[in-house]
Length: 559
Image (cartoon, rainbow, N blue to C red; front, side, top):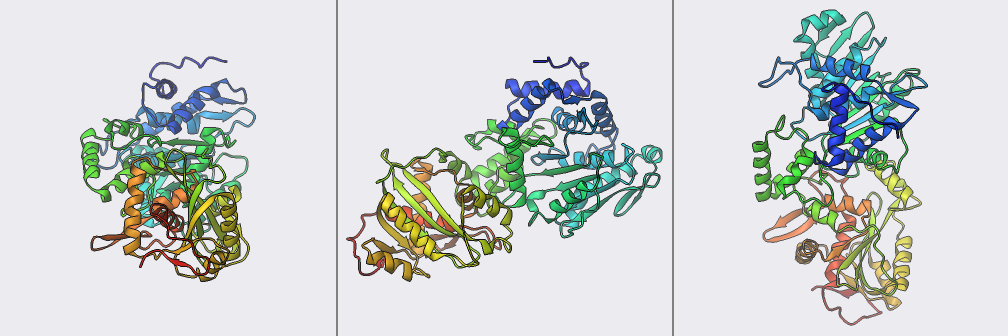
């Protein structure tokens, strides 16, 4: 192995390398994604097809540190990059492909928590890329779901130029309300909203707060436009916090970048710094907050974080806001039900259930746009209950669904079974139920009365014990209470099915007096919960003594 060069102490290359070494050694606590990024950086010094160009690193970092803060107590003072920021910038601009002399990384994802100056750094990179590299006709875009959000990166960039007139004169920059221009190169930097499908021919595209995006329209436009800029090395920069839609474009992008970091996806053009906590961390342990907050004690005040922590301990509504914005843990909404950490701890991808295991089935049927779910709750030998989903989606629902990217991936990987046509295939659902009855010792099958008569009567006619489980507060409230208690006590395990995980994060609560029932987050019909509703039904009937089986009619579970 080629030793890592001894960079001059306190040089930008030294700071980046020192940060990586401290993370890998454990001197700086970090989640697995950051550890993987740092290990990758150190290992890549041994490659002979790329090189780490310290001059490019110095040029980028020194330029950015000559730009000013534009808001708050530090307004007007030069930016002082923290070690994690130097590492981020050094990776983007320092790695060069030897054969071409172009930058290695064409896309970078920064999942940074609130308070780490992500928009400020995004703005600084935007100014640097567009106007300091001499690229002719550089088109720079700050993109987001709204013009206000797009301005969160563009406005700091505009103010940086206005507050440094000497720099503006040296680079020949002109500023207007919605653009920065460089006349001698024909370059510009503008804010754009996500509705447009035209990404131009961008030299740099910055997607701010991608978690808010409804779909991947703007991201696809930027990538298509970058492909037209041949013979150069444009950059797509995604800077965001976590959000509420695990099937949305932002979460899917994060999973892809994580695959690159984990080594399961080979893509040498992508770089990511993803600051969060690990799956087995308990957010209620304040010590793990350092992992997700690289600016802890510097740009992020410890007292402020402790106040947010205390607030979250006392308020479930505050928990989701805190988890997404300060710990970058994906949640469903402010009205979420299940604790995401408890659900993650219950995952066992290697879960194996022997044939003949006692099991109960919950079935939630749909027509067109929803998923149809069969969920088996299996009683394991150690007394725990395994929650195993079988999910169906008609292919005709893909094109009209805002979740199509996730649905397509899940279909390709077998997480969701895709059926032909535009409506749910109830015949396929019945066939799967019968298959499960042959494989496991199925005690009962629970249906909601809605659209279930044909299947339930067919199954009952063949001696399968079928019960009706009304999806109303009187029946769902005790089901939810028991399920949550078993999850908290470690009595539930699941196979880490990505779609069911998404549904578990989506499920919210509506209350009628003291009673609660499951629902989607208000105004977000694209966040499906069918699999978790079926899981609640199956778990509920697994917890009571079943009535005698009858083969002639569907049985009533509750009066």
